[in-house]
Length: 321
Image: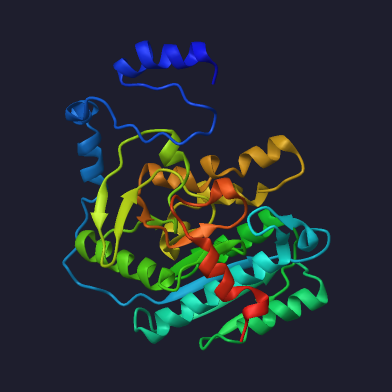
């Protein structure tokens, strides 16, 4: 930022409750005039999201985890910008962390009925064998299938279609999310807590989206069993919800088939803002503080204050038992 902009920021912009920032810079300044937050009925709108018929009953929801994997050349040999090593090492560590988190959830009693479905998009044979070896550590039923269609969009769409037919919780997750051991247990626990209080469904994302730190809009904090959860209107296509949510909002979900489409106009249809984030206009969405997982794709996608080094060290392929 040049000297003129710094002067403009200090003398004119900041006194008005705003700030000039570099593109992408995190904004942690408080919202001005917080006492007027209800002027546009935002509090009433938030209360309406929770106007359910919860009777306090804590249901034991079953869970299906739907994972998408793809480790084939040239993707698997790319340099990963976070670990500065092969992307394959990062992906296998992420898969290992998810398996460990599922195991922890089962062993802790957070969830007793879990199934895992993995759609592998034609990984190279040795990479697929490595994925299968990691999945072999699971103590719950799991399947590893090769989907009929290739590419992220059609596979994601097929997973959501299967999820829509389920009467259980679903966690649809990419292969580049690095999970804390307590991640699955916490997602299930918070969903159960809010459902018991409200009787209504919701969508959860395992980390805070960066947009919450560079674009201010009101968030409401709810205290969960082990951390706070913040409302959000933004998520990636990695999300935790109930199968009925996918079914009831299929019109918003269906265009996920266009994710990663080679034609820009078609790919635009599959963007989160044009698909699953539309559901967050009518249902509450939450993300945890601190994060339960990190989108382990690039440094700028990591949640604030997330220490990935110990997690990666524990689950990198070289450290596998």
